[in-house]
Amino acid sequence: MKQLTVALAKGRLAEKTVELLEKCGVNCAPLKKDTRKLVLCDADEKYKFIFVKPADVPTYIERGVADIGVVGKDTLLEEGKDIYEMLDLKFGLCSMCVAGFERKSESITQNNLRVASKYVNIAREFYASKGMDVDIVKLTGSVELGPIIGLSDVIVDIVESGKTLEANGLTVLEEICKLSARLVVNKVSLKTKNAEIMPLIEKISAIIEEKTV
Image (cartoon, rainbow, N blue to C red; front, side, top):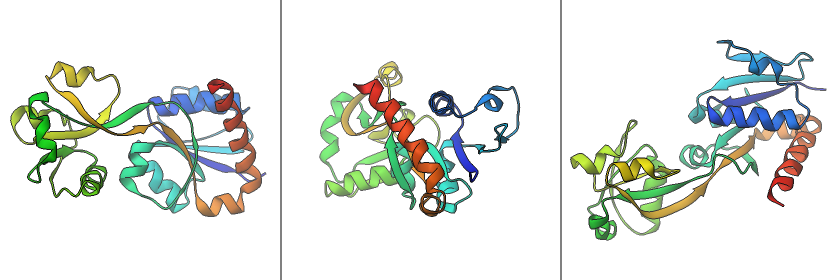
């Protein structure tokens, strides 16, 4: 059996992915130890696990240093990497939304709209699909500040519970798309390690289907 390298996004996605892999019979014991190591292998060295920032998962997959990985749909849309999206894992559920002050909701139809977002490509493509030429302001921190301090009219961001928006007097004005965690695969790996990758994908798919039935 050829070794599979799995790119895990640090944080909640990694925790959920480990749970899923264990249900598939993958030995994830090394991942539960308190360590600062970024590269770990199971006892049989069938799997190598690398821990990376969520936004970097598609890059590791596209470049072929990882065979498979788990990443949010938001990152896939924003990065636009040349990789295969194989499965919707049905966890990490949230939405990409336009948010702002309710009284300014009419401004979403104006061409002089200022939009603050971490997801500049998603925001640009969304408004381009509406035929709108907007001013995109890239922020990497708390984008909710944009409308509050007058830097932007609205924001484009992930919304899970909506509590942060509510606490700052903002509301969802429009939903762009639903988001969840996705299993992605390197295109070359799917050919050269097909015998290792496909059985794992089939097991994961069966587990997901059981939960949704």
